[in-house]
Length: 198
Image (cartoon, rainbow, N blue to C red; front, side, top):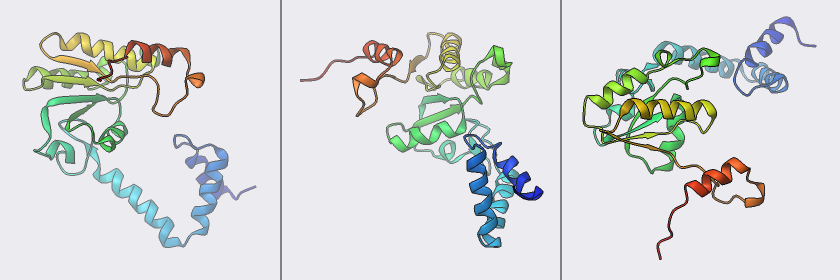
């Protein structure tokens, strides 16, 4: 049984995505045992980020002063636009080193059952960016879920035939075994197959 203030800390930590009660208790105990300066440093970092981080006016990713670092980088290819659901989706694509274009963050995926309609996302701003000219390809990198697929189809229908619209390939992961793949993944892998250059 934890004292009320520690229990309040655990309760707040369980509100974080992916943090259950046991993980929250471990984190709370850790924060209570580290030197006070370390715990307060975390609190200060959270406060500072909340005050300073804003949506980038161009891509709607995370920015501190004006444009985000990617939008401010003049070496990026402005003709390629990768559409993602959330700001954290940019990082894995960047780590791959395979994409040197720009991004557009939707702020979620279409889900009418959950009350998320097109006007709740930045889809209108995406269409404006594409229609302003200069974008030759829009790569839709929404999650391979029902809502992500619906969002991808909706965006592709809005952008029209003037701009090439592509979707990230999906299928078997590198190093994966066929026996452990589900039917949907195998189906996508077969649909997305490509020729082997000899």
